[in-house]
Length: 410
Ligand code: SAH
Ligand code: SF4
Image 1 (tube, rainbow, N blue to C red):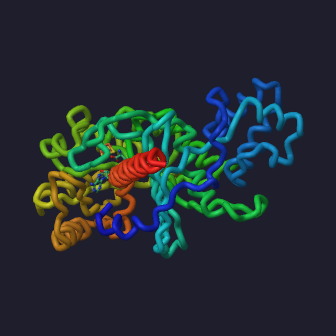
Image 2: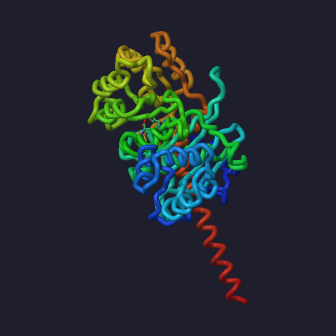
Image 3: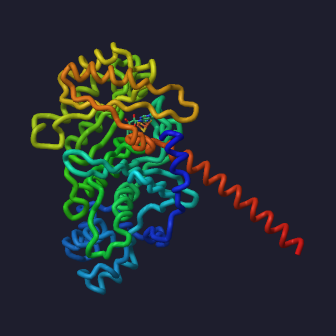
């Protein structure tokens, strides 16, 4: 995220309000927010209840954004009481939210116990020929172990995986933010697209991400189209194959370099799974039913780093590399962050890179300025908020100390 955007939005930042759902329940309670349908069905069966209760409760949670069992009017009073005792519906705590005038919304969540850790979620609205979209960029981990050299999340190192409830809770909260003041029965889902492009490597938190995406696609929950849920990976090859077996969603690959020597440096997981293996895994992912599924093509993400990966010869290498892979290329102007070892390629350089690829027959887009906000989900916003929180804490301590002095002086 650029400093200009931060400066402009800082005044809009609000402290999380009491509107966030219940967060007081005890730790032993089962959080129903994170359960996929098979998991929820098992939960009800274990309680001696009918399986169809799962669908009913999921609709209340994910379509009507209800967190209080008392509001679930098609469930008997007795069962509601039982549920209240043993489970909860709990989204991660919102530490900051920022709804900017252009429609972009950002949340910083605290996850984990005590002080916990911060993760972020960004929603970008857009209008195009298919209508209006609201795309939510979701985080899957706190930090990331893969340490790509241009990524501020990577610089934080890996802290922990998000739970299923913390992942789907980001989508829940984004939808809920449009419905808070709407009567329960009139509530609807607003987010149209999800990209797993926030903090973390989703394929390294595989089970939680898979189950969260199942909830996204489930008609009893968000009922999203499989083409509108995209998982982005830096290239964990065996997990790409596993994903192909387990679910039908769109795939994006963080390519960023067109030869192994440079990719080893920029995206270190390349040393384990080099380009040939990665491209072959993408081809397998699309497979033979490419036309019927979400897997018509792979999106190739390519961050434009000044003088590093933006030479005409890199564009030529990309043409060769992708010639047998149905793909759409998205060039991402690099988002600088403090102490980043790179600069952003010039506009002209990006445009001529794009032209070379378009002339070779590729669909190649440049992520627009507003798209910069999506990259804000790569750890940069959290850094700023953490700073601000620290400053606020210091300020509070100072005020408390001064009050103490005043009190002691009578
Ligand atoms: N770990 C996954 C998903 C999260 S990163 C992955 O790497 O694909 C989401 C996207 O933002 C990736 O394409 C990533 O390479 C890109 N990105 C990370 N840091 C960036 C930066 N400083 N500027 C522009 N894009 C960045
Ligand atoms: Fe991790 Fe993706 Fe950042 Fe690489 S680009 S460090 S894989 S979050």
